[in-house]
Image (cartoon, rainbow, N blue to C red; front, side, top):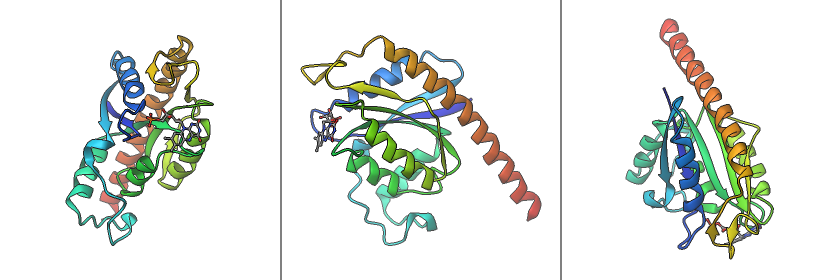
Length: 195
Ligand SMILES: Cc1cc2nc3c(=O)[nH]c(=O)nc-3n(C[C@H](O)[C@H](O)[C@H](O)COP(=O)(O)O)c2cc1C
């Protein structure tokens, strides 16, 4: 069965992101076609990228990088739960993505954004970043409004309609995670036969 991470993309004290990620994880946890785990980038305490060698070379020197890489490598797909900061994703999430390379490659990704217009501008930027990391991003995304899905801009009360979007996004993400897993397995087989 594929394993999918629900990545909490903000690290700010008092962040809304944790409640949003828990809502995603609770709904996803009712499914029987994949296993889901909450992954909070805050707990990895990643400094601003401090590896001397580019991540695409796969030579991770720092203990925090190795710990983060080991966690990310466990999954076949990711739900990135992202705030919108200045029309982009959080620097913390971008930094966590930049830290690694191979661990993201040939995996699937879906997005849950939140902000004044549903975090859509942050998600659009993340799609470009994900493409460079060789990730397959599903079309459906969840767009939560700070004004209608949070009381006083801080207590998360999602409208019922978002459950349908989340379910559709997860349907797409699970099937693409399965497809990408078989792609990784078959390219591994091709490497074995060539060697
Ligand atoms: C530095 C900063 C910049 C922000 N810029 C935007 C923005 O451009 N668009 C938007 O919709 N919301 C913006 N917001 C509002 C955030 O989307 C909102 O505060 C959200 O709750 C942040 O996520 P977090 O609570 O998980 O950190 C900004 C918030 C911060 C802290």
